[in-house]
Image (tube, rainbow, N blue to C red; front, side, top):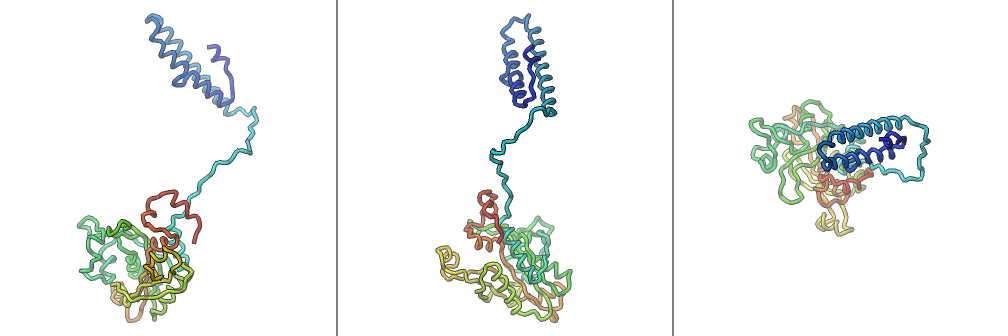
Length: 330
């Protein structure tokens, strides 16, 4: 007991060592309690009382010394300026977010506003208003995630649904881009993914022509890819007529270039076309007075090209070693 009473310190480490010496799992008090079974039954009660008294005094002593040490400023504290600091890791932008923000920035410089909409849609906004016929394969269960019946809703398969909603509630002129997540049931290859990101653009006004569309895409390709060499190939989409696929000349400098372009040097990056008059009429816009164009591209595909990523699944695995590489913006 005298040793306990005589101990005094304001050093937190010494106080902790004192506490562990007596009250730790392998401390003196625990040892006393373990050895109490070795003494006679008559002596156990008084010995047990002494051990409990010791335990109580040590506990009170530690609490008092800890309280004093918090307010004791008698010992000057000197920081060791030579000690290395603790590294603080900062978060990074996800590569998909980097590419999406860059696209938004490019289109905003030529007057495109931002429009967003719900990810859970109905058949009208996702298919019917966009001129999808009833028998179109995109309506099938293998391409579309339908929610539990009888609600008749689904997870949107493209961000064109945002364009439909915007045209229903706004009068021309309309100039918007609509980035967002879309969902498709794709299990064709190991690299397929049911969730990905799109960004689509829409321009509706009087006397909008295919030449306006081509010039907009040319500006985008030059700004993002630093490449003005592009071509348009005829294609088909239910909601545009005429429709086209856009290719840029990627080049054939490496083996990867040969692989991703199949030896041609040309690489498809988006689809586009003039908005079908039926779509305009479905949204309450007079197709005799107004015309427009639309385009759309996958953000993952563009990110894979710009960052030379070969597997789309890397975007969704949340591997810090992968994500920490993307510190700079485009």
